[in-house]
Length: 211
Image (tube, rainbow, N blue to C red):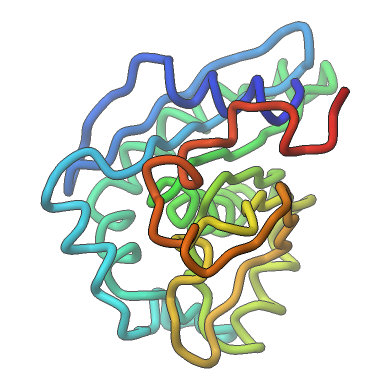
């Protein structure tokens, strides 16, 4: 699926709302042999409280402690058992043996949750998922966390428009994405304030340099 089509899929499917107002869905794509876990972006005021809860905290007390922005970490752990149960139930041995892969995708707030979910999927199953996000913030704190999570995933493409201010958050040293893929052109500081346009533009194939 092309990135712009995947973004439009994320924006238009029906979601389950669980835990701390997390919108998620699991769907099988036979033509691609992919099982996708999808997360939507912020949908209510509680999401924005989590968006601005920046301080990093350890998500798991393990050999490689995962440090994550606390708001998104709290949101994910409010529903992770339910989400993972559905994903693992759907990604059966039969699908795995038939060559299916798992891909975890999200937009905005959901992009941050996608990164945690990919680590969680690996932690629970030993399998590695791909990660594809749009307009996601930078949720991981520290090189040790980055190295650990990078080892838990198959691949990552985190699309970030040059004028999307959300992709610049968390705006403090130490925070990073897995693999930022810049799209669009014409950077301008003033455009960073137009989130209604540049944070929602990922369904337009022209920004990816596509004909």
